[in-house]
Image 1 (cartoon, rainbow, N blue to C red):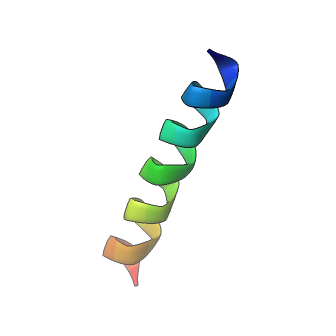
Image 2: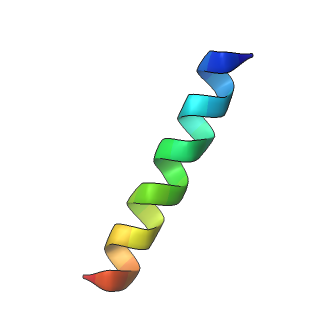
Length: 21
């Protein structure tokens, strides 16, 4: 459960990083 949550959180951070570019 924590692993999946961490994966989702990482995806959100990566998406935000791409948007900030």
